[in-house]
Amino acid sequence: MIIHILQHLKLMKKILKEIAQQILYPFNAHLTNLTGNVELHSLINKLRPITCGRELIRLGPKGDGGYLVPDDLEGITACFSPGVDRISGFEKECANLNMHVFLADKSVEKPAETHERFHFTKKYLGVTTDNDYMTLDDWVASSLPDSEEDLLLQIDIEGAEYEVFLGTSDRLLKRFRIIVAEFHFLDELWNRPFFSLSSRVFHKILQTHSCVHNHPNNYYGTIKHGDIEIPLITELTFLRKDRITESSYVDIFPHPLDCDNTDNPSIHLPKCWYN
Image (cartoon, rainbow, N blue to C red; front, side, top):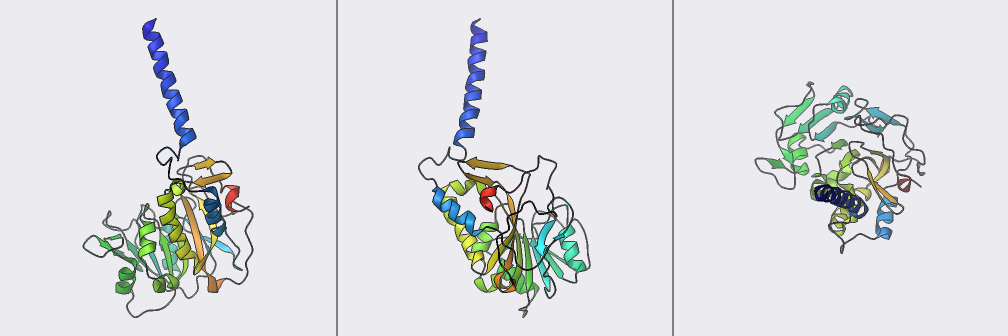
């Protein structure tokens, strides 16, 4: 009898712990250092997708590795794509549009696919340039010396995107007509130190670009507290402001061309991001 009681108490303790973690998450480690709802709402509103006067098209496969971009690719001479995975469909379609495609990743020996316009560098992207890392500025300068033409950036580097954007010069950032970036750890926006860093990243991008699409990655789900719901990972598409010919808020999600990244349950962009 005593053994059964102890087992029951142990099970109840486990259940209560899991409930507490769900209630407190993502606040469990930052109870005295939280981001205010007003600040979160302000950031989310600044990232609200707008129309741009151009249709969105899909480059890459249906599923992971495919992204929506404005149909404004003519005149873009090169795509820079740090973070090499098992799929290079997006990059191959850019190459087929006569862009030079520059890929980089220290963790692999070469891209998963090949193309005559692919150029691979075995380094990570970061805030310094050494044997293992390079800055985005140094990468572009060494790849396209004496060039000032428009570029496309597609970046998925598992959380290092924040330091890379902060370390990139304003001059180079303006050269990217289109930026497609996967942002990670967004549940940590409730953590004030992370919010302070990431909000500076978004502010920097939004000085010259506007968000034209938002697609949550369904590898993970969303975290909700009150009227704020945040996907843990989301793919944002930005278009440089001088390319925008009209502007109104997008209020229908998902886009017909959006596809789930994985076989996990589908998630859609929470309404607080566009209502």
